[in-house]
Length: 309
Image (cartoon, rainbow, N blue to C red):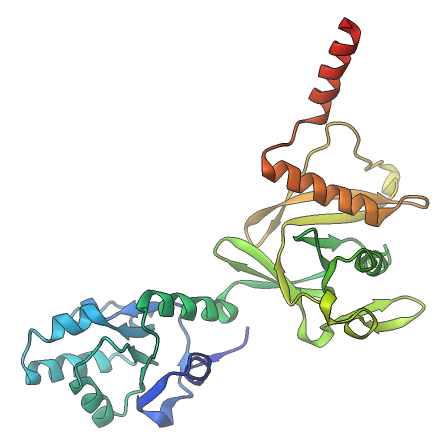
């Protein structure tokens, strides 16, 4: 996980530095944002929460204006004593005393130009997700098919990369191959290529192929939600036939504590695996639409109708 410094937030959101310019390399070590309401009353929590980023806006401004200038100075001094890496005020926070106190104590204080405090805080949290969200790496190929992120897993040499190239020919989108970085955000799972292997596919007998050059940047997707995990298996591996027939349903595959639809597809000569994967994704989309009818039930109904006719 890469480190998040205050300077990255300042640059990303074009924040105006009001004081503490020499502290822009303050490390943001705790995920989240605190509004300073309780802190301005003199209450401070023990532990990590006291070291989160602080945002002050309309409510905080209305509260502090109930006090004299000297009382406000004391409140700000107590707030700034909590070793907070970054304090942000919005355009709606109008008390200039906070700037004077921040300059006196050399505190990193910045101001946002965003008019909506809720939108601003949400954007910051989404940006912080890239640094604090749980992350794992998986040996897999990742492609977007019919708008669904499909993570192809299986033992080395099973043909994941070659199948990915076949799916690209069918106008699907490439996310990554070999090393897929998986993150959890808002209880959903997302995947992207490892930066070192971005846009690259390794094919045995040919070597490394840059998909952006062979197929064009229009087939590249930087990241995608992982909607289904498909495991490619050798047909009758260990004497077991993994072929699914009537009534087959999606199992579940756990990624970072989240259950994702999962399917096994046996690989053998004569099977058009890219077409089978497309059919599996189509079935997933139908199930999610609520229009799906179990195949075994469908066949039973048709058999009964045929026998009664």
